[in-house]
Length: 625
Image (cartoon, rainbow, N blue to C red; front, side):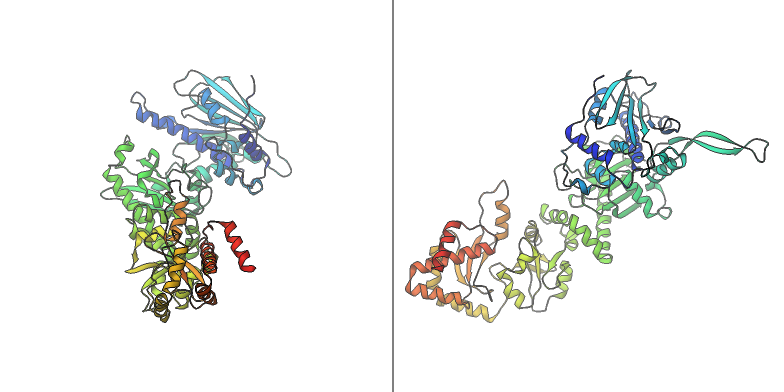
């Protein structure tokens, strides 16, 4: 039979799997057992939706068989099986859900990282196998088929024989070398320990033929070997066990076994509730952000069970969007097995569970923030943006849940701080919570608009995410303190500079009017600055739309060329202002030249594009002459 080839990108990844060095090759068995469990789950789901089928859980199991003489390890299941087409589709294309994104192959040193990133659990078998053979018979079919591959060279599919539906994955193990011991996967104790480590909570029996030495009947010295089939795993779901019986390692193994992530969870929440609605749940806050988290492909939700039976793999209704990074499962006896997704949205019990889960997650994050600040900041670096989207996305409706979880860099503390920490340090005379926006902390640090607020000794929060300022517009206030941008029209600081600038505005009204005329359509006003100390010029804004918001909105596909109401502010105490006054009195052309230069300088400070770069450079040359 003609050999089929893997797709090019699949071949590339398979080659990496086969030939690279991994720290935990043993995970191949966990992956195969998880796949076997999924296959039995599918049979169970089928029985739930097809009244002609019955599902006796006692007839369904996974079996691991060791053939030491022939170096063969077999993982068999009594699951739904696969047709010829499904074998070709499921096993012929690695990571078929998306293209390979090899950023740096040299960085992919661990099997966890590769398998986690590309979803190739079955192919981990090639880390230990010379040949992988899959014999499968689909439920309801009279035909069985064999899929076989030695790795990157491709695979074949041909008819085969199998007594009952299900799948056998047959691994011909590699020969051991000086550096690699593959013989260990032929030892009963080793296979048993791997199953206990990774798959102890699989809800179906995992059987093995276990050989033990026993005293011969009637003898006190002579032993004989006795082999019997034993169930290796406990099959007691972790969520039904007493918390006091469980260790952190148990939760981490469950996290890995369920493919919630290939990092270690930062936190777990084990919930057992009895009352108006009874349920058990185990929730995990991941340590690292999933590679697809901010893509359309990412699907939020918790696994939903009814009395230990999975209803759906991703129940989105159990999590608010802003906590979509949370992984885990919920099991409730109060939910119907045949509940549909449409019914879920109106299910009272489910809504009660979701409300409680939201509170539990919020409390856990509060505790992490208060007691383990460094870990919380690591979490926030990964998922803080999602919390902000949650606050902005529902028009501030989630303010009470999220505002105290937000962190922003502080100009005075030189670290990330909460709103509560900021307010606790505010001087009595300070009326507002001040913030500045920009691409980075370093860039904000140099903004001219920060000068007056910083000179007063007031703390400034740095907003560097594109969503930050939109979030603040939804919050409006925190503990009755209004948020105010350092680039806003009125800073609310009564100073001598304010009084003198008002006088300057009146005194230099004619000059500023001429400059405004030169900049018609570009700025709404030109005035003496109340905020500048050392810099000659800056842009400020008036109204709800800030300059930073304008920049963000212009990048959107729906951009309608919205513009902030910009004001050009001139530092009347800067030596440049003397040149402006002199030009206004003696040389109108030079005043226009100076005005254009100052306006473009202000644009560059704000990170905005200069309208006509050629004209700008020509004007610089005129000044140099």
